[in-house]
Length: 296
Image (cartoon, rainbow, N blue to C red; front, top):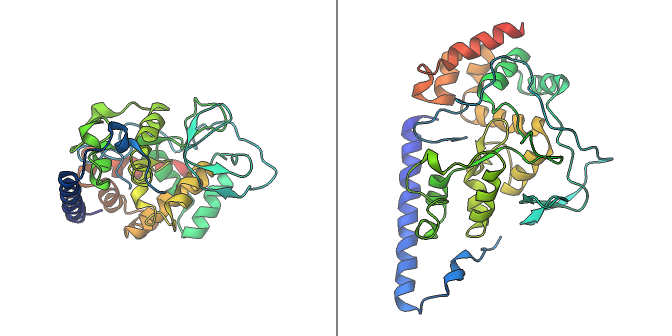
């Protein structure tokens, strides 16, 4: 996205947050203080992987255009219906913010057939899609060290939770809600799910929006830009497989007017729009062009 648009969004979110905090403060002045645990009670039910100084995919991109390794598939007889309900757990007790009426769907690794199908759907050269997977994706969309069903790879962004929830979480949990981006707050891997779970105890929906998800590390608040009608759909699709995760990434690209650059292989223009002004320093355009050439 263009930097000026991001700045405007930040200002709007900050103004809205300050207005809501003013209302909360006014109510607190006229009502008795609540018990300490009241703040933690759950409320009713981009992509910006590291925000300001970080560039998406800078530390995680594989070196070549091959499809990466993936967790074992979880075989299911059919695509089970689901009921969105959080929190829930996997059979071995790991936290997941979704529950199904049947087994958790198999998390299929993206295949050559999937890439060909997505290339046809989006009218893009398959080699260009492979280049994006190699350079701009998180390597795998799932936590490979977890037993099946592996959870999607996420990063919980405390600075976005600060912006998105009106609750003063930073007063009691500055590790979950921070006015500015702070690399030291990340725990990485499966531990990011613990941070998300803790944040959901304050504000479930805004916590889900404050994490980046899957192959493209698309931010939850971008769920409509990623082609989903609801946050529930976005979260569930991230669990179902890398094809859905990559489709989120491509919808994000399309809705940010970058699909034309991707189709034409205008790598500098694509990298500038996708990674921001620092794309040259990280040579994202060169890496994309090289990955596309290797694919041919």
